[in-house]
Length: 471
Image (tube, rainbow, N blue to C red; front, top):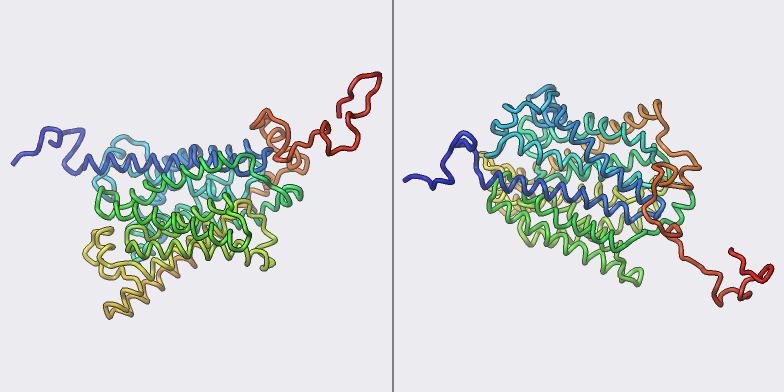
């Protein structure tokens, strides 16, 4: 029986290449890219005070471009290449055409597709780190931070957990799509960097109103829908497991948003739009390490917990714990990414279904991927506890690595340029840093109070020579 003409292998499409998988992988990668550009570019630029809109958006756009150049220059091979040391691949370029069209280390894809797919994950990680630093970091310092952190932190975590030769991968850690590599890393690194950079100006810390909530929702929507590629692309094949991952992602996210919304209504009396967006993000983050290896009912439970536990740490614990109050984390990435990412990793160690792991990993020894609850159910309690222990080990590793590496990078940059903007730049914002402003409108997120209204006792204002004087 011969294949249809359009499926016949040829020089451009060798026998190992699956055209459907390759098409989906490129699409999934582009969806993830759209989460950053324009998704987070829009979200960051609209959720901050007006005077920081350009700077915040441009921090994201710069990171996206800088990461790609570093990724093809050395980052990809350090994350997924030949073993160099215990937790890192050999640095090498990924630009030779012959290498790019060869088969990737996993799936039925060429290296070029895999490099592109993994790039958008690396890029969004740095952009998430930026969320903790909005409104005060020296842009020149950010320009140095991005390539340094990618090289000395992200590559180590990615190689350790996602590369088949990585030490945590060999131990059997389950991180379906980046709960550890992306979200826990960015949350801890962002919080650590925020400590070293220092806080925003006092006025900004006291009052930091979004300049456009409708645009913020547009950015959030791109982030949510883009997660279809984020989690749906990680089996590296158009499989049943990819479909399950996509559905679980949206179920958990919707549940988390609704849970956060209900808590805001119960305790604060108003359905906060910004709060609902935070709940959406924590749901997306929490399901990421588990997306294709848990049941639908587990996705609901994970959504309920991701909408309540990070809410509690942000709204209650953050105001009680002295150290948390000392660090100015602009976008609360510690709670939305570090707490939610850790929560997702732990819940994966409880809810992971062995047979679903078989569909995801497609390896012979899939039985050792088992959540604790399924260990109890099948009489393999020891294996379940071992899986949970590996998940906890992953959290300890990522937290320790990112506190150490991020601190060293910030201290190194501090020797070259200031980490924080000067006080006069902090007062002015975009115009002082970039010579550009987002809107040709009056005000800085403040209410416009016209003196030509009945609130003021004198109406009309005093005149001189019969002419109205401007305030």
